[in-house]
Length: 481
Length: 159
Image 1 (cartoon, rainbow over the protein chains, first blue to last red):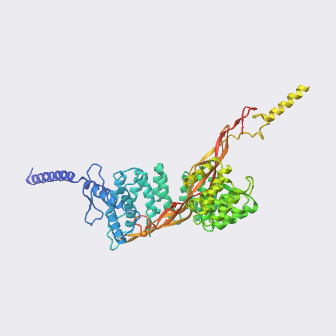
Image 2 (cartoon, helix red, strand yellow):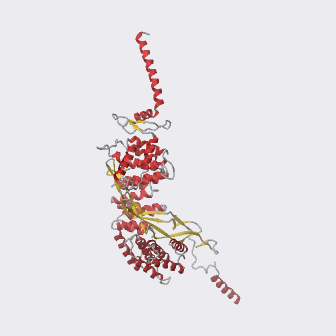
């Protein structure tokens, strides 16, 4: 061995010892940093670093979110949980010092959402159950994490803005992490996210947008046990989109027939896009199918009622409704031009003396008290007349209790078999609605209502269930009977 | 001969009077061999959908907050209907009407300030005389499954 080779051996040995010392001290001092660095190398992008180590106690963590940016110091988990608790403890509805409250909201929100690695860690804590205090309620830290998630996504999507205190990052990996973690969350936490996802928006849209459709659809297929959660999120996205791809809609109608909400949305979208014949054809397949579950059938009927051209909607409802679907009646009446079309159809049917059950359904959705009182006096079918009085007396803005009570009283004066009378349990319901409004016992209308109840009981024409409802109502009102 | 006539008359009278005899049933219906089908409880949002809410500025960005508020929530109880679902020896018969409840909602400015998280104007039950306004909205006919009466003649059953 010559002198040059000897020097190289000595240098090699020195380097090996130095490397061994470096590795030993590095792993002992901060395992999280090593893990983060490895994760970052693998990611090969500027995406937020996943800072999570099951084994190591969390301490200060270093996030490298931009190549030339100084490393940011992350709080430890306890500190982050405290920040989440503070954000989650803010009252949903508040009053007082506006600037003070806004400043507090800004401070608490930014403490959780920037840098974005902090938000990511909050969602990890949420997902691994660290924030759960009571599985039956969303805890303050859980609420804070969800608020941070939704508000943080909206704010980060707007990027770096001048004067902003935010260090903008890409929120999509955090959103994906949350969507994927949702099956481990408690039911109240998932419910809370549904509320927030629908409640907050900026000019760029809501928490989830069209870009998330595929991911949500995949997760729904993967986790059918919480399918309604993902369906509701999907519903929010579809409702916000002016024109959903027809193929996606047909896929939903073909593949998600167990999901009434999505079928309804898909059909409404097709009608909204003017694909009336296609949508109606598909709706008829559901409505005529022997094995169509009741909820799906009901959803299809409501989709047609609310989104098909009005005549088509009325025809379909007339053909397939059973007369008591109040939700369907409201869908028909409350759409643009619905009330007029409903009354036109009602008039045609009453002139023809046909379809009393469908007439009852149509009338149950009408909101014009004078029309309803007119129907109560003129329709030849007792159930339609009774329904008109129930609907009228239940309107929030109803002012014609006197007239309504007059009709109910005169119907009771008729012989029981008189065809112009009213079914007694319909009378009881209309009176119940009136007593709910006039609570003062000195009110003459209240006294007349009580007399009607007592009269109904004395006549013995109510069936057992209606009789017990009247007794319960009298009890509620403190009337001895 | 006379005795035969008396027996015949008595048997006719008996057939008219005794319960369960073929002639005393008017008319004798064939058992439909069907059962009632379950319809689950249904909750439907209806009426005008309001948007209760306000906005908040965070880090200079205006974020709208709010929630859709259906004015009416219709609750139709679980019940049964007749859809002709087969069940030998049974029939689907009416059981009476059940009531449909309507819960009324409105946007109410409980707090005048903009909302911190949620809405400044809240979707809450409409109050009448200080109580949430819940009304009867109508009826839904309920059915049940009953065993057909045994038919003494054929050994089968009738409705």
